[in-house]
Image (cartoon, rainbow, N blue to C red; front, side, top):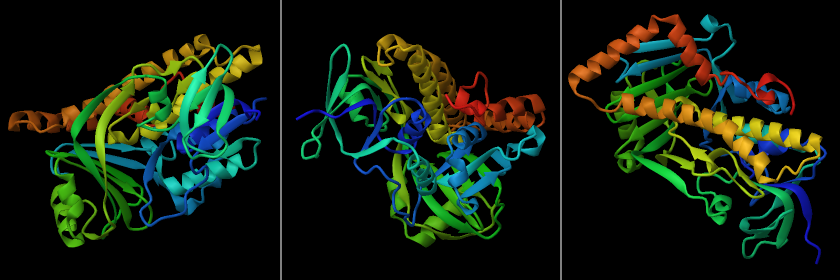
Length: 403
């Protein structure tokens, strides 16, 4: 039986994989998006949320996805309040109007964003294929992907396989690529809560002795709380009233009383990066290449910048008539991306370390430093430019141009 051939197979149909398929869809390439369920998930009561930076919104707009998200499904952030402990000590505020932008970022849900990406993909020639990656064999010209046992379709052939299959990437493992991993010794608890005094366009980042707490507005009187805890299993097991009491004591009263909380989700907090991002006929993007602590909400935005740079390199190779699966082309993608990822990792890891539990004098100095930053516009602008994903040089998608 003849093995189906595609120019590029993208393994992983989540946000990052779907974004790359869409970014490449206008090129003269046969693109296949491979996933166990390559479609937007059904809505559920506890939808994960993501912070979309200004630069990422520009990229998603260029891809034709942002306009497909209904206004009720995203919330602009015009103010970010950063504070030490429960909002009683050091403060720094970032304001959109001070920076000349309509919003510092946007909060949207996994369901809405995936639906927008797949809606746009439906108007392209990208092949959506149901299947789970099993193993890979390669020669000088192509890669053959064998699907996992029990999957229909057996094999696919391509010039380039892109691993967009997450933190526990099977593609990365099949290529023998090791990872460097740091466990923060904490887990995150996520809950959508109603509050009595909402500030619908303000996001909060609290640094407590037990870890950071982010509060992201998701519309009306609702906020998503992402709480880093060393005792996360205990917090997850609490009944709703006890959980609300602990959240109030830890976060403070800047949003009034917590009126209700959804069932809690829990996931481990770690920092991880692949020791290599590319191999012959293979490239890694998104969490397959790097996983960050969620503080400052940089994860998806960093993955989307992977998409933009890889799309630029592949488009350049196609127009030059070059072999885009060749390791030399792929090494350029790896080289360009690693500085941004290293800087962003240092930024997020530095925040976690800076606000780790400290003795009284150090904590006081840290609070004073936050207040000083609040009074220095140049420092605040530098911080905002990084979190908004607008630090130059920008790939084409982030400048509003298709690759």
